[in-house]
Figure 1 (spheres, rainbow, N blue to C red):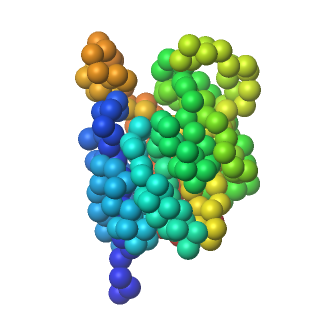
Figure 2: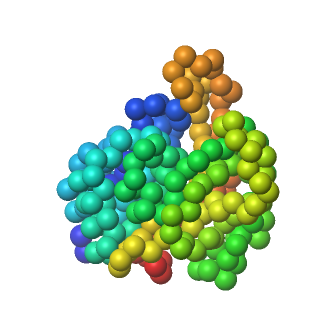
Length: 236
């Protein structure tokens, strides 16, 4: 039997603004179910050397400080053929200037948690094969700043107010693939989760308990396919 792959899961945030315990357990279960994968778990990207040495990287983070040395390690990991499956607020990187160029985007804002329609942008892509062409989610709708010429896989259309800004009606990417060297990033914006005490900023009142689309079979399939892609079991 061949040696198992090593997956590095980075899941956490000093802001504690999501239910990282829920996401960590769900993603570990998905990695285990994928078969022939071992997983190491981190709260941040400080162990750049270990992340660079892994076979695949999965993240569910928000506002995690990442030093330049660790950013360079992440880029080297991707350029040599590594793949990074980045979920939800992983592109919420505050003032970091290097990480958005690697991920392909930076989080800007989101309107209040709501129901909206997600559309498959590339139905012929192997990652999208057999999925419903459009589906409804209850989730945060992320507005992101594009930093690379990525391939949009899922999208929605939205305009309105968020974070004291007004955004024009436009197509908003919700899942994309960004090639970096011989590897790349698969980013999935969907996937908010929080308990009542997991609030955006300390001192804010408790929020409703939310699990976003995590219980949807289609979302679970996206997670499975994302892990398979990161494990190089699907085309780049």
